[in-house]
Image (cartoon, rainbow, N blue to C red; front, side, top):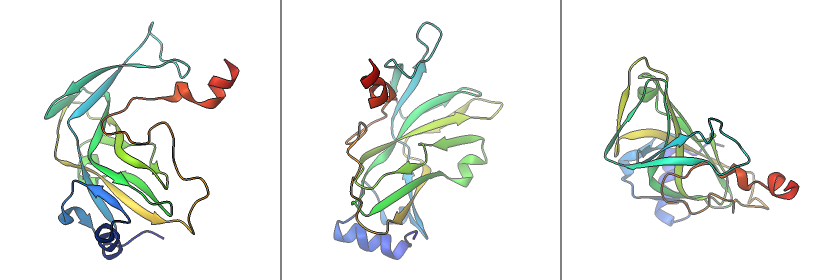
Amino acid sequence: MILSDKTIKRLLASGELGIAPMDLAQVEPASVDLRLGPTFLTPRATNGICSMSEAPEYERVTADEFIVPTRGFVLATTMEVIRLPDNLTAFVEGRSSVGRLGLFIQNAGWVDPGFEGAITLELYNANAAPMRIEAGRRICQLVIAQADGVVENPYRGKYQGQRETTGSRIHLDSEVSESS
């Protein structure tokens, strides 16, 4: 069940759900608008090839605005840090107004119960022109849903507690570590 604005506000007020910093004006009918943070990572190819088995390299930029190149990719983050209890999950969706400019927003789409941290966003500029994005602007929306109960294994993974844009940590996955 997707939570309504009334339920989201109640959970925020009780402290069961955490989203900070935020203003209640960010609560939409069935979501919460999240704003773009000021840190950006652009991936660098190592030896001309990106690999899931090696730690990737990134160029880090901290700025109030960032230019995403034409058909370019950048990692960004939300200003807000969220804290989901063990019975709520969330989906991150791009805002329609942003998508209509040709900026695709993703975060692998899913936030597990028990996650706590800022959300790293994958941004792709499908536009034929470079796009300026600005920290503090509403960039995406968090749609929160209730699980059918408290989960047995809440998220405690490799991105737990992140507070800024975080690059891929896929090289730490167990199937890679076990075979090494």
